[in-house]
Structures are given as C-alpha cells and as structure tokens.
Image 1 (cartoon, rainbow, N blue to C red):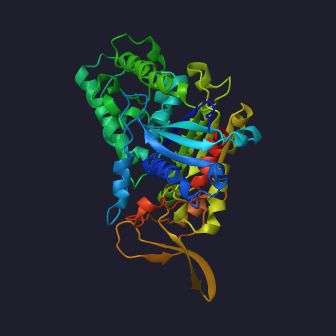
Image 2: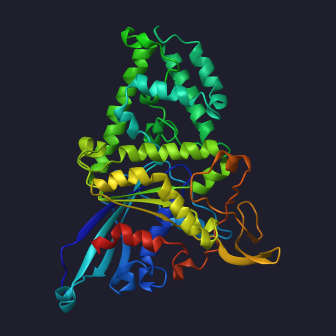
Image 3: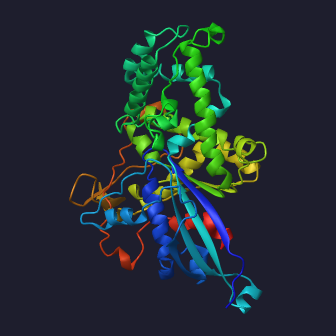
Length: 454
C-alpha cells in the first residue's frame, strides 16, 4: 500500500446567536469518527463507496488557539438526562485526520490511501458582524445606529444608554469615566437586545457581547454617538466625538482586521448557521434583524477578486454553505420549505458570490435529531406531527409544529402569531459510543464541504 500526497482543509464554522455552533461541530466530528459504520452517512461519497478508512482527532497545529472540547460536549449529550453543551464564547480549534482510499483506475490498482487533515475553527457569529464596519466611517456608523434605535424594540431597550448620551456634548472633552460609563451602558443595551425574548442578532461591535480575551480592555470603551451634528468633523481632537472616532478606528484596525488577517487568510471553507425558526417565533422585529444580519454579512462576503475579504486579506475560501439549523423541529414534509425559505432570503447575495467563482449552497439540517416523525388525526384527517421531549419538560409529546413559510411573512402573518416552533431536549444518547449521533442531512453538509477533497 502506498500513500499519495496528503491534503488539508481549514473549515470555519460560525453562526448568528443561538444557532447551535457547538452542537454542530460536535456532531460533525462525531459523524466523521463513526464513518466506518456507514449507515449514518449515505450521502457522504467516501463512506457510501466504501473508501473511508477511519478518522481520529490529532494534535492541532496552532498551539496558541484554545482547543475545541469535543470530549466535554459529548459528555453533556451522554449524561442522563442529556443536556445541551455550553456555547463557546471565543475562538477554538480542533484537528482531525481522515484516512481514505483514492479514486481512479490507477489509485485503485495500487490501493493508494491518502489522509485529509481537517482543521475546524469555531468563532462567534457576532465577530462576523464587525466586517461591515471596515467600509464605514465612525459618523456613518453613528447614523446607522441612531436610525436603528428609533425602532422597537431597540428604542425601549436603549433608554438608559440614550439618556446618558443626551447629557454629553460631542463637541466637549470627555473624561475616562464618562467614556467607560457610555460604553458600559451601550454594552448593557446590546445584551438586552440579545435576550431570548427579543432575539436580536445585529449586534455591533461584535466583541462587546463576545469579548473573548479582550474583556475589560480599553479598546472596547467606546460607543456610537446618537444624533451627531453636521459639523462634528471640525471638533477638536480632545472632543468626545474625536476620542470615540479614534477608538472606533483603532478597533477596526487592531481587532477586526487583525482577527481576519490572522485567521481568514488560511480558511478554505466556511459554513454559516442560522436559526430561522427562533426568529419566526419571536416576531417581525427579531426576524427582520436576523435578515439584516445575514444580508450585511453577505454583502461583505464577496470572496472573489473584487471582494472586501480578498482586498484586505487575500482570502482563498472556495465553498460557502448557509445552513438552517434545528430541522428536526419541523415535520419532514417541511424540510424543503425551510431550505427554500433560507434560499429566498439570501438569493441576491448568493448570486453575487457565485458570480465570483465561489460554490455556494443552502440546506436545512439538524446536528442532533431530537424528534421522530409521527402521524395524528385532526377532524378525521391524518396530519404529520413530530414527537419529542420539549425543553424544560420530562414527558414526550406529539404535536403539529406548524408550517414554515416559503416566502417572507407579511404583516398579517405576524399579527396572527402564526409561528410557534418549540425547542426540544436532546435525545438519550447514553449508548452513543457504539454509533453516531442521530442527525438530519449532516452527511449532505460533509459532502458539500469535503467531497471534492476526498
């Protein structure tokens, strides 16, 4: 047996708040490690064709990056009763070696085996939302945030911060204490918008709610200034406006650019996870904010020669996957609707990115399947249902979760409170060592992201 040249892929995984990044990565690793069993991954070609030779977790090459704790995440899923793993709050990394038989007549004749080294990099979706800042001035950002805070629920949630900012004069010098308090109140406002009852996702700057190793650093002590006067560019260097502007530019150059220059320049593939069902549940405010976040990210995610990433970081990402998570929270006949809805949301930007030569796809998936398909009867007619244990409960229930729209909801849809997709507890996985985690379409995700490399 001989070996061909080994290959490598650096896969970046991110998602908007609450989209299930940690669970997705845990399941992805688990599916690969259990690939020899075959029946779990029918659409992952190397498994279906019998070319998969095994996989294992190996030492990562970037020793300064925190390790993704797959072992701890699996422990959470294997206890009785199972619990969801704790979400990660910063960047982490894990490396797998995947052994497989090569394709082709010559490869088969000599029984050639290769190894794919897969580096999975996990980082908060909030950091991704900082990318649009690179094309904005401080004054433009202030104007955008001012307009956003004139609409609910932000207008109510921002009252403490707005009231404090009204006391400050943008043309006058500001003390360190005032700068710190303004930033603190703005950060509290961002945390309020992020709470589950509001479910907003367009949170800038991203490091304010996900600071990582920058918690307490002076670089995070700034905020937008509402209702800037037109003559702000003429203010003195010691004015509140100029100091805030200076810190904003420092944040862009030393935090945003530095992160993407260090990591994105080495990424080959990117997956962005989106929890559409949660946004539909909360209402139009949450949904519109999620849509704005996705559009804002996609506007910056022009990976081709003319794109922002490529101009700044010489990015080589060749595949981009958008995935609607928690597909097990709807009936099987609604999976296509969930997928179509996501595709409809990003269709214009998807076309632009594909035009630049990047392979883009959308799919609905479930990293850990919590429900089973069931059938019930309503007014004498059979209806599709799902059964599982709701979050916070202990008994299994069968229910009709509702239908996923195929187009953007109208105002009447929101008024009717049409959407009520509930959360479920993880299934019992105490015997999971002998088989892979149950899932929906993780094999399709693997094929899209890695199929051309194996």
